[in-house]
Each structure stands twice: as structure tokens, then as C-alpha cells.
Image (cartoon, rainbow, N blue to C red):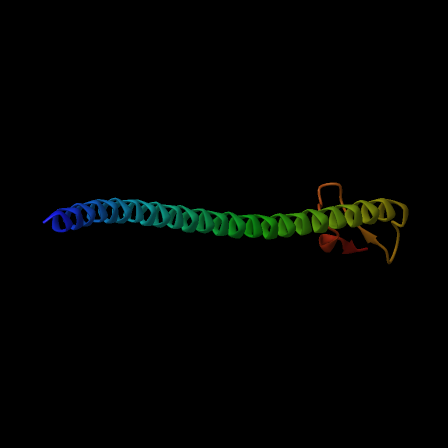
Length: 108
């Protein structure tokens, strides 16, 4: 009988240890799933931020190209107006002061 009681005590002790181990394992699995979900969410936010960054960079490049083109046309107009005042005469283009682009200059 002593051996039986001793074995029963060992079994009970091992069952408690198994239960504690299973509980710890379950807690670690829950924590791992939570961490994986947080990681996935952070990666998704990073991808969205990268996409927005690329989009804004492209928009900035397009706007800079438009500014460069506007500057080029403005300088071309200034040169045209300056040369138009010097070259006025028969067979030359003349633009009035109210005309903004050289496309509207008329040959005299």
C-alpha cells in the first residue's frame, strides 16, 4: 500500500506540473499571436506610409516640372518682349503691353 500511495502522490504532483506547463504554454502562445498581430499591423502601416511617400514624391516631381516649365516660358516671354521692343518695324513682330504670351504677337 505504501508504494501505491507514493505512486499516487507522484502522479498527482506530475499532473499539477503538467497543468502548470500547459497553462504557461498557452500564455506564451497567446502572447506570440498578439506579437505577430502587432508586427503584421506595423508592417501594413509601414507599407502604407511608403506608398504615400512615393506618391507624394512623384507629385512633388510633377509640380517641380510644372514650375520649371512655367519659369522657362516666363523667361522666354521676357526675352521675346525685350526683343520685340527693340525690333519693332516692318516685317517684325510687335506685341502690345497687354499681351501676355508671344503666341498672340502679330507680324507688322
